[in-house]
Picture (cartoon, rainbow, N blue to C red):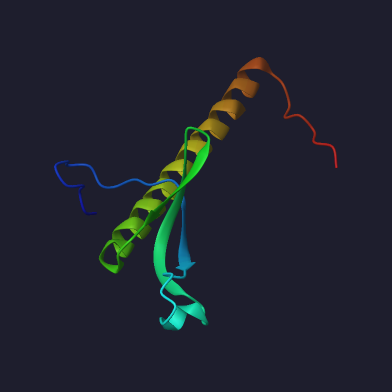
Length: 101
């Protein structure tokens, strides 16, 4: 795990990694009639709005690792919350609620 610059904690990221495609606007560039320029990007929510960070190839592995750390932490937290609900139900003597299909 690589710590963030100036921090001892590893990078933890919530968002989605995707390929950003765009045309540069130069009429003589190959992208004017082709697929466009590609670069990796991170999409994330901030204050209810979707934001995008364009990344360099050098940052890609760090971002992937940060997204994976977030997914593992969320899965662990969800498992702990599920165990807490099960424990509370047991203490209250109630069976799990049935779901409608």
